[in-house]
Image 1: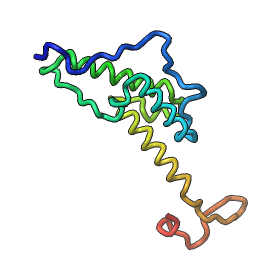
Image 2: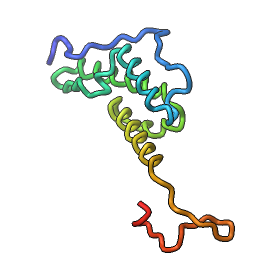
Image 3: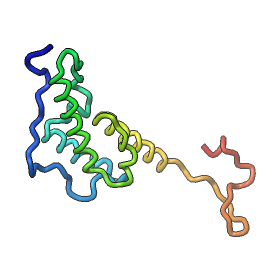
Length: 142
């Protein structure tokens, strides 16, 4: 068992800046939110947890370091969740780590950007209802 933990506990301070200005991540502001969020994560010294650069020590080898890692990672996840609007929050509500939360947000935003670039289906007007044009199949619309 380690006498000195391999992972120090990050000290949080009351009143420290942990909330970005504005509504946080709303979806369309991913690029600017990401820049501001990385700055906040660096300021709070937890960006390495989000990037998975610091491995979690094994509980049986370093129990204090193991617990400190969990607390530090939870702090990073807290910073992320506190800076996300309600709609994107559903993508990270069950994340087990800050890395998973960030990855889920990034994947969600990439999916949204891909959908936004996809051209709309060609439509025709029939009886006031928009329907796909005749002869169109799913295969030739993708």
